[in-house]
Length: 88
Image (tube, rainbow, N blue to C red):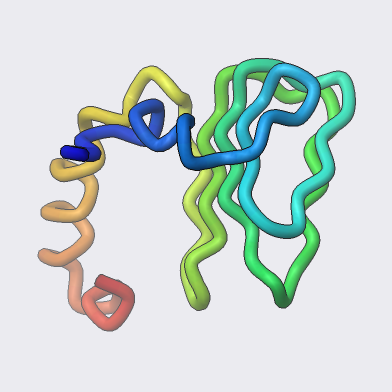
């Protein structure tokens, strides 16, 4: 499969109360979110809507679900800033 967006990943994630989650995630009163946790930390979402949350080791990404096609722009912008290059 060509995975070009976070929403395309939803078929590989677990459904939890109207959300899609991976690993240690607990959501309550939340809807339409994609949350990628890790084994090391628990992500708790309460009252959130339409978010993508990714715990990727030394970086945590939180963004509006509707902006997932703009992630490449964000990565390019971060890579131009010396203090953030080590995270890219």
